[in-house]
Figure 1 (cartoon, rainbow, N blue to C red):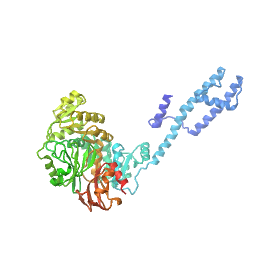
Figure 2: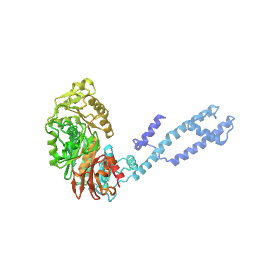
Figure 3: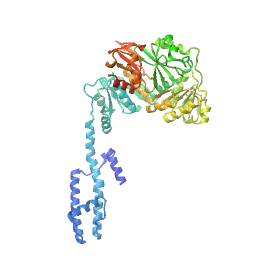
Figure 4: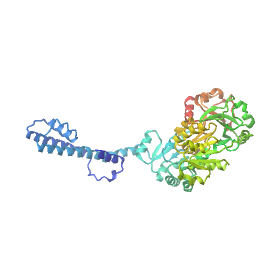
Length: 567
């Protein structure tokens, strides 16, 4: 029975359906054969029972035939003669063959193609004729799922390509905008209106992405293509194929993690730009600001920037006069380029950040972190558990310790208690969470920066003690959004982004301090735009009007809450 079920499962999956050598029968014909066999067996049953001296009606004959064929065999009606028992065995074998083998196979043979045809007709092979300015996504994955939501917040439509009709139907049922087609087929991109699209994201494996880019370029040379790559070799090939931007995730992730580590004098990091303004993060630890209130620090008076918010492990607090600038927080400043540069000088007056940086994990991301930090003059030590990676690590640094950082003897030997910063780069979130707790306990004053593979673990890594976290998916999503908006990717922190919204009717004529945007949604207002001019220093008493745009920093869910609360 298990073998039969397994065989039927293979048939349903379609892996051997094309190789079936079945007689050309159909379900109706099979039903006629089945009814005829039951009727003939019932007649023979009556004749053999009469020969043995047993009397049964015709209904009993049908009942005995069906229970025997289906292997139920209740045993309430049995033959006494050898001839009757032989007949019973014939009916039993025929029943097993017909009901448990031929019927399921025939059902799959003729019903599955019909189901597949229904799937194909449910999902369209082309986008609506009036669709324009959309984003085409080649592969549905966790990154695509979040990207579709983020694009919808910006009012940009998206289309996902899926070749498998069953999977396409499933995505369609989940309200995902999907088009059925092959990734290596030119007609697919023509049907997706690639020539009218804003961007194509090739987020399949490197080899498949090359085929995607080459095929799409046959349709249009104008539309930007952003491709993801795992291997450095794939980056060059994808650029040659026609990709406008290649996101080598390990490299970009490594640089983002390294940027969050203070080396030498404390400096603000420009994480994004919007028209005339720059948005920068700055550390509070090891600066003159530590322990002061924002009013006492007089940051704007000395530099011109406005400290709009304070971020503590992924959560925003408003930049109010009595906001305490704690060492475990990061400031978010808004101003022009010259003002951000003035902030750098103000932060670093008389204070330098020394000490070794520990990079735990010597894989691709870890090596990129070390390479970026050493380029800035930092003293870096890599801790790696796998000795087979030693040769690759030696290309970056000679200060290497092979051992498990979770081992007390190893982590003590590498100097955790004296480390100025710790960067966790393993691709296992559980390991990074454990190490964040461990390192924070051994060195409460160190700055911990961590990689996150799955975005849902961001809260956990912050609770564990990490000051900053970036995920692989965040790098990819921000790269696409940056390309779409014509600016550099803005990595404010895991889940945080810059949003732009028109002032709704309910907020028209209200002062910022009484708008309730922060209290009711958690979004931090950083600027107000009116007639194309951005004011990065709106006062709490600034009156916002319809027709203006408010720029704020927060998460996608907080942006959703803004749309829900303010109409």
